[in-house]
Image (cartoon, rainbow, N blue to C red; front, top):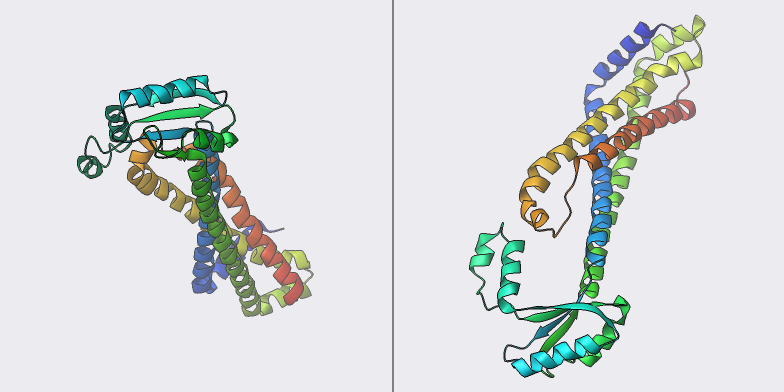
Length: 294
């Protein structure tokens, strides 16, 4: 097989259908970029679950007018409860200091929050987090200096449900874009084969195999898929540098959300590249087998 001839045919084909090739590359890049984003979001959700669910607590927020006797009574009941694994008391000053550390990258929010705005509380770790209702019944709101009892697990369930929805929506859009890319690849290959039908017919007459005449078209699609994958990987790198590492620096530093490590992008990059090349190559091969006679 003459490698130089095949490569020259690939270059010729890409040059002849430049606009459609560019459209195919961009559509592929968008779909693969969305797929990579979905995978990164899935990894972040998994890391966040490990961070938060291991630290799920029940917060017993005390009323502003709680008396020392009421506070001591609540502490005594927590110490004697069979449902409580451990607990800590957090004063107003400690709550405000923790708030300042968590939102240190948002000074406007900190400056506009009074030092006494955050209530004192007991943060309770349960032996069985699903037994939250028992603690809530033992410390009803409005009784014995209790303002409210909040289960962080309910909030986390809603949060992760929202994040999972965002991940699924991203992947769904990626699938739609991938279908559009496959259809565009199919149309591009059909047009390229039609434009070069005289050359391929001559090659067949002089004894070239069908595979030999199809290979340049498959390589064209695979090369376009590879370029699209590289653009998608570049987009993920720029997103990490310009958005994640800068805009989300505060929440990441405070431990609210996990960082996106370079190792995650390094792991996803080969997957994106393989998907781009593989899907484009398979789409071109199927199109040639079903719709084009070479």
